[in-house]
Length: 55
Image (cartoon, rainbow, N blue to C red; front, side, top):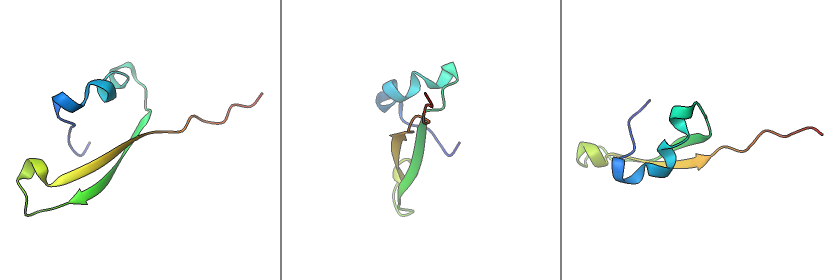
């Protein structure tokens, strides 16, 4: 784990994780070392695509 999503922004993202669901991927979209440490990294969180279901 690289870091965390601040509490006021993680309600939706935090719900399925303790249940063992691995449905999100995070991509670093910004790195600014000259900013305050809490603002140096920006991420995009996406919901992973469901696997194809064979019928």
